[in-house]
Length: 110
Length: 121
Image (tube, rainbow over all chains, first blue to last red; front, side, top):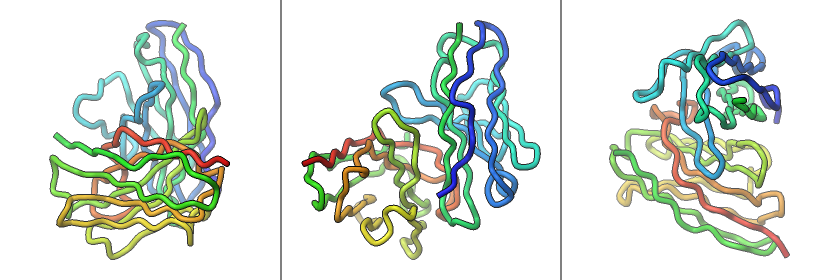
């Protein structure tokens, strides 16, 4: 089943800003928007953002999400060493009636 | 505090069966949809199945349709995934997950710790 498209890796310097992208189609990202997850190695994923730019309690304001058409974005400002992780986007696909995931972006903080 | 305690991981041969369990606590289990998501070693996340709050509806990814069955026991606050006719490509860490709403298309807001299922001869 078709998934969402994310760049495999992004590298940014400490304290800089990283923007991660996630491209889908009108049945998923373009329809319901995307959620963003952070996963550190060996740990379960953690929800960062839902309905495009709502943060669960406890998630830093440094994480913000947006959507333009079929592409969702996650912006992380003031990068910290602990932000180094894998980031996944996901969306409900109304045509497939499944959740679809992106392949994940490995963020490296230099 | 939401807790999802998983059990049932194992090493099995191709064609085998296994039932995963996920004991939920810290929230009203009967009011929320639940999901299973898996992650093959070194790979990304893949949604496997979701079930509504009442258990009256469920959805599956194509690769597991007809082989896996999701269910829930509200009296035991437990989610299950019955996996039959297992294949090598089913090898993964399986995560139990709570959805934020009562239907399968609600996003996941909490994740279990994961349990490893290995299918190999």
